[in-house]
Image (cartoon, rainbow, N blue to C red):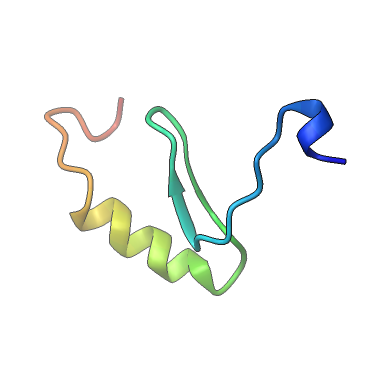
Length: 47
């Protein structure tokens, strides 16, 4: 059903799609926070 709308489900807890980073649920929020803090260095972290 999702494939018909162009959605591709993945089983990863944290997904980085370039300009969008999402977490899989409540408990993966910690993983997302750690990933954001150390996994994506940026000269402008707020933008």
